[in-house]
Length: 437
Image (cartoon, rainbow, N blue to C red):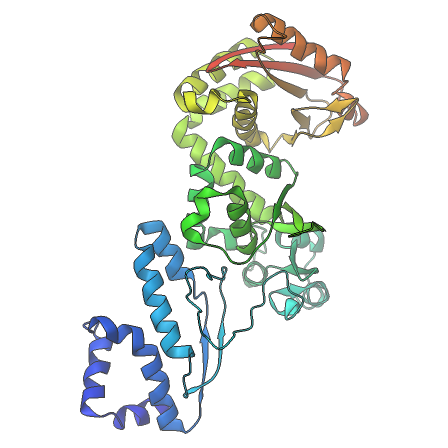
């Protein structure tokens, strides 16, 4: 009824603008001021100033960045938000939610000093999702029997130090009669940009993603002033984007002179599923499901000769000379093989760069059934100063696995059948041998 009253009071020229906006035939500047015009009409009809609520204000900016009209959408958003929020006498209060605070592009320049509350702020931290106390009530009211699984799947976010559950996923879980745990939030269309960032990133960042998937952490400063146009230029920017988007969580903070550093980790099983499937889809496109299956079967059966053959073929077709020609090519192979092994998640837990015995192994495959075979993988490049050829490097790699007792962690958990695997690399050449531990 308010809108009918407002529409009745429109002057002829206002009605003409309204009709053009409604039928998507508006003039270039009319869309930029359409929101402010609507607020003016509502104020005129009701006598009350307007509360303006904008959810996911930055979604058009993400789309512009992803599909090539970033500059245009930045200009449009700046003009539209300025018209609606800056010195607008029809505005009572404005509230916007989004992932990013797009500050460098000056979208919010001059907007009367808006208050900004990020996931690092304690203000309003209980209202970003369900708190642990609310989950206790939900478990009771809805008779949720698997409360521990509820936490494993949808818990893990931290806002201002407070543990928060994903409200979208919790509500979707409760809304289904079968009550099966599955990814809800990570199946939304908003993941396209994140998938692009992961699959198009360089080998160093992909290695860190594999470390995250194996249960580890990455360290980065966090700054909510993210510039999307520069996101490919810095790993720190990508970690910031993933954190403020909900794909990582800060687990600890280390004070530094200029800016604190945060240890970042994957928050829960739902997000881990997203990272896993993203890498799996990339591998399927690059390698093929059948070839990947043959490689993994060869490894699990202990047929290291066949495993090495499949690995060499995949390296030749997938990795570039630029990837493998750096100072630390073994790190590239480490990340690549780790991505392949993540597909063994049904039978093995994958660990990377953890301490065991008297040192830190590269990759450990930990069978969920202790009666099955476990693996320790060590990657080594041919060093001209220490290793005259591939065999010298292989001997060094296998000797390191034994002398550092990398299998100690597996034996402590009852795994007796353990295979040490050396992977020696030189450019795009790969040699693989094994030893019983």
